[in-house]
Every structure is written in structure tokens, then in C-alpha cells.
Amino acid sequence: MEFRERVATVAAKVHNHLDATETEEATKTAFVMPFISTVLGYDVFNPTEVVPEFTADVGSKKGEKIDYAIMRDDEVQILIECKKAQETLSTDHASQLFRYFTATNARIGVLTNGITYEFYTDLDSPNRMDEKPFLVLDLTDVDETLLPELRKLSRDWFDLDSVISAAEKLRYLGEIKRILATQFHDPEDDWIRFFATRVYSGSFTKRVREQFSTLVLEASSQFLNDQVNSRIKNALSSSFPHQSTETDDTASHDGDEEESEETESSGIVTTLEELDGFRIVKAIACSEVSPDRISYRDSKSYFAIFLDDNNRKPIARLHFNAKKRKYLGTFDENKKETRNLLGSLDDIYLHRDTIRNTVRNYLD
Image 1 (cartoon, rainbow, N blue to C red):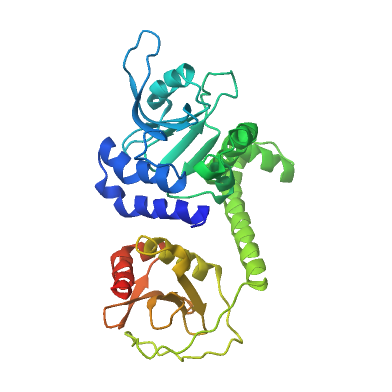
Image 2 (cartoon, rainbow, N blue to C red; image 1 turned 120 degrees about the horizontal axis):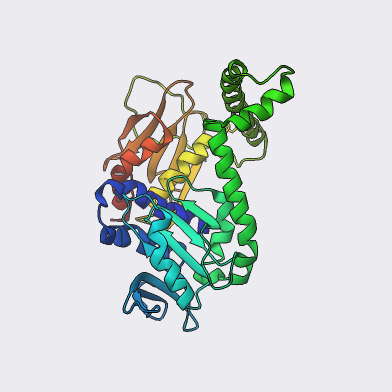
């Protein structure tokens, strides 16, 4: 399984079970242990690799425990402190992590609620954990640019020196991106003044501030949309693998739309939205089978997802060609297709049980 898919698998677990995870212990079991094992690749049942309830005497405090210590060569490398999933992380939660960081040889401290993972090191002062994380991973909105650095902390790719050397750059990049996100949604006076004084020659009065507050917000939104549209156009004009599909006589269609089962490759365009939908279905299905057994074929009529690249084993269909309405096709035990209206791609997760049952039926 590719590292990106390993992260997607745990992210799907968070999405599926967040509402049912109300305690710290449930958070550890449902989210944190799968993250340590699936994403980082450490054996959570091997006490020489992962030590739960790690104990070390810190000054006058005796017998304090931190939730997990990840070991390499009999040395503590990563400390993990957990809070419950329904709790927003804050620096107050990191007090034990700060103390243990000083008392051990660990260079990486992780504070998490199972959803957000904050990674700390000692950039500002040796052997003293920084107050700000150098990397923040949000499993509800994964920033894929961070994954190469995160992978360096995994068991098979462990490269602590490389992570530490990149930590300062990552920390500043992350902070700048968070500031930009804030300014794009709720601009401060200095941000508004910055643009206003470059396009308006008059005094920056209260009236001008109010006028440009709206203009800056609108311009920011249009700029982001233009960037997204530009990337989509470039992607669609690039060499995506376009695959034609055969007509599957075993599946019937529900709904009031009639689709022609054209198999010619001409005119077939695989969109980013279809590929994103495929990744979601794949992340759901990989709880039952290896991800490399899940494939797709695109056609003019629909985007088909199969098990073992076998058109007799359809897992789902993405009907995304219509301008207004988009459907997810799911299959029952008789391979009868039901179209489910989607409000957004996230709605695919609402049909996770049906998708998994479909895969299981092919394994019987």
C-alpha cells in the first residue's frame, strides 16, 4: 500500500467513527493505534517498538505516564500524548509532553486527539520542546505536501536527521499558510490596507476600509477560484490514463436517466472529480481487500470501479457526467445497481457499508 493510501485509510476511519468516539481510551483504540501501525508502520503489540503508558521519573514528579513511546535501537525516539477526539488541542495539553521530552532522548513529540497530529521538536533550545509544532497533520483535510516528511518518521523510512533539518522550514511554511488562510477568510486591517494603498490613492479612511474589506474578500475568493480552475484545465489537458469499459450486462440501472453504453475511447475525459471519487471508494474498500486489487475504467457513460479489474465484479459506478446532478451507483448481492444522489463527494462515505458488503460478496 502506498504511503498516501495508508494515510487515507486512517482518515476514512476517523470520518466513519468520529461521532462514536467520545473518550480518550476510545480515541487511542479507534484512531491513534491505527495511525501508529498503519501510517507509521510500528507494531503496536511489540513492546520493543511501541511502549504504551511509558513511565519515567521527571524531577520531583514520580511515576508519570505518557501514552506511547516509540522505540528504535532501545532508545526512545518519538513520544505521543493523546487527548480525546472531541477535544480541541491546546498548549495546555502538552505539559506532560514537555516534561518527558526533557527527560528522554526523544527528538520528536506528538500531541494528538486522533484527528489532528501536532509534531514538535527542539529547534529553539536543545533538548527542550518547542512551543509551536513544526508539522500539523489534519486527517479531516490532509495536506499532501506534508506526507513526504511524515513518511520519514515511519518505521521503514525513518530519517530523523532529515526531518529535523527540514523542521524549521516546515514550521514557518505551516504558520504562513495558516495566516494566509485566516486573511483570505477574515482579513485584518493591515491586510486590507496593504491592498487598498496599492490601488487607491486617497486616504485610508473608515469608509475606504469598509469598502475595501468587501473588495479584498471578493478578490481573494475569485483568485482562489481562478487558480483551481487553471489547475483543473491543465490536468484535463494532460495525459491522464483514459480507459474504455465494456458493457456490463449483469447490472441494471435504476432512475429516470437513460445512458448509452458506448465503449469507444474517443471523447472520454477522466476528470479530477472522478479520480477523487475513485480514491474515496478505494479507501473504503481497502478495509476488505488490498488496495492494488481495486481498479477503474472510464467510459462516456460512467466511471466504473472494479475488483481485480474484472467487469463481473463491479464495486461502484460514478455517474458524474451530468452538469447538475451526480450519482454514486452501488450494487446489491444480485449486482443490481442503485443510483444514489450525491450532494458532495463526502456523501460517498454514507454508502461505505454497501461498498464493503459488495466487496465481501466477491470474496465468498
